[in-house]
Image (tube, rainbow, N blue to C red; front, side, top):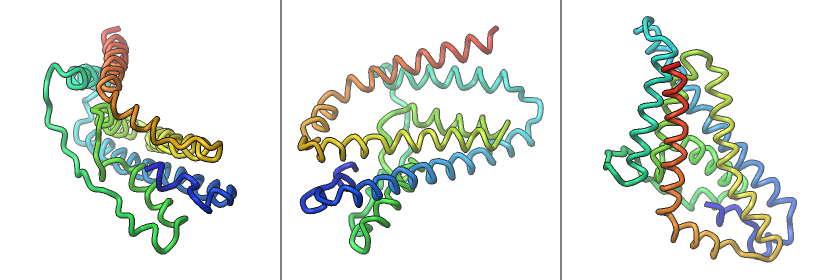
Length: 203
């Protein structure tokens, strides 16, 4: 994705144009993630209305167990079905306007569910949207905004690297070649999160 936004060729001479595009991509990512969080937050409120007896403590415990199950998936101990669309954002979006195309890319990727999902922790994030929204829609939207901002960081870093004369392809290839390690790190992080949530539930 960052290779569509980084300043290449003649565009590298116009740094301001790239800055505007990467800001719009990041803003789009935050909007897409926030809308997804808002939608799932409303779903969380609907579930809470249907089952008013479910306390916050039980939701925390459920998220803790889910995080540990997803950790087993990331570490390769179990294989869970991971529903996803796997759709590729079309390059044609860039033809009319690079600025509009980058913004649309950000919205779609920020929502997260329309493209390939490599890590199980994303599904935990979607559940977190629902749980947070059941209590406060504002909390769910803020969580979505934070995720959307995080999605924009690789494009920013990649663009800065190009402007400094360092093309990010070797770094990207290195990240892909060590994907197994990122699953391991993600799995360990899920264990920490799950243990913390279950500890909070028990205590």
